Length: 343
Image (cartoon, rainbow, N blue to C red; front, side, top):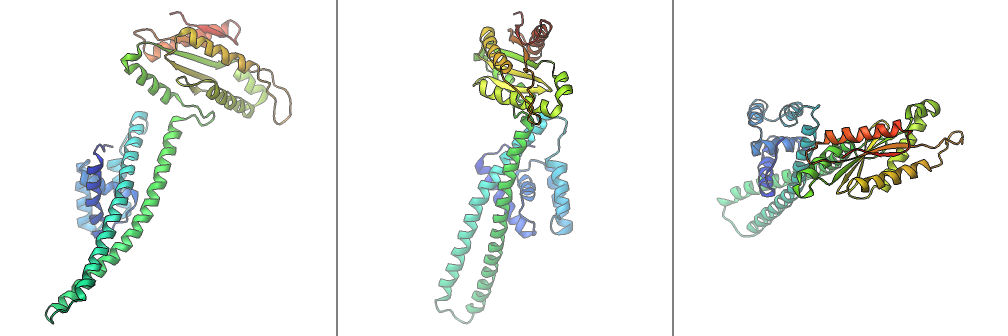
């Protein structure tokens, strides 16, 4: 999906789209706005050809064809490609913002034009006219009234579309959040983790001052088997909340999956990150958990940590691998401890 024009261009495309939609009795909803906006932006040449053929055949663009064209040309992407999906969400959000702003501007202008036209005709009718001009003036007045009535109807449709677009904007924001957030813990997921890392290392001024903490809850499979998955989920939720509270900017806590977490620590060196991991380890081990259902006390929940600092030529995979090795060393040494990767 490709929409990179500025606000002035966006307004221009929308101004061309509205008369076409009115002319062909096309409902002004976000999907149709996107189609005709795309038509005038010429972002998808094959879409223009199909829309022209459709309007020539039907005199309009039926809803089922509009939907088909939208998914065929505009939302065409590989659903398994996460980067494409994010780009689509961002581009569509950008477009919806333009539509919303442009619709407000266009609605105000068309309403002003209609009022001015009726006032001019009323003023003209107040002056004496000869018999030859009177019929023409009456026809002009009738046509102007029809235009104003049509405009009022379309204004109502615009208002409804505006409300729908506002809803769509909220849904887009929610979908972005859902795509970036682990639903159980509320922490960011691996996608955000990788994005933030790549943004940081792309800035050459940051050098290599970035450290990774890998965290894994000890014996979590046994814990789930003993206390049940519902209790296990509550523990993971608690850990997620604790990490949010303990990890202040610029540290980014994420859930990688299962009982495994990662803390990306930009601008922190190895020893600094070790202190962060040790603080979290101690705090978690001291929490007195109990079952909400039975009131039974649950043995302390602990976690093991591995810490690795980025080397000059490391990629993210290399850092994860070295932090994982340190984490396994912590597990093998008896768990509930922090180990540093060799630098």
